[in-house]
Image 1 (cartoon, one colour):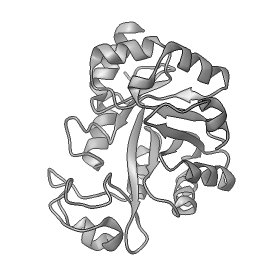
Image 2: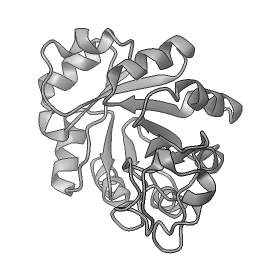
Image 3: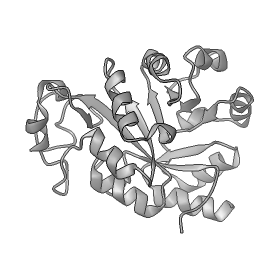
Length: 234
């Protein structure tokens, strides 16, 4: 039975500690392990397809070569992303996630906001989507196009007056690197009605600490570990 909790297990690039990242195989196994949400990365191909891949080039995660933006999807789909998996279309992941999982879409590029929203709306996933990015201005664009879609700024280093900064982009959440998390930060963000989803946490004791501090979810490569931690403290 899937764990019912207000605190989420967010599978980073799927169950990427065990399976090839950002693949359907990884996302399916994250679901099987009990994750509530999957996190994925989006780039755009030469022919305008939105695909789930972390890097701007394909060398690290596939047996191919080249920049994602310089390849059409037909070419990209021929590459092996591990275990015989191909780089999936965002649309195919949304089809899989519908009725199963929430999806955190990290935008790695700008200019794709309307197409992302079109796909999310077409697949009736608006209530189950969180769009995040280090490119914070893109989140304001998402808000302007559809304010019903939740957004989150990704944060690697401390930001002065982070609440005002985040609210300036009309976001719903802050996703900080886990080392930035303190009880005070969590309480301050919650007081501004901002959710907190730290990344990327693969150590069970650290997961336990973060959940105990009241974060709304933990992003991890090992969703099964996070599920076990939540079960133990529930």
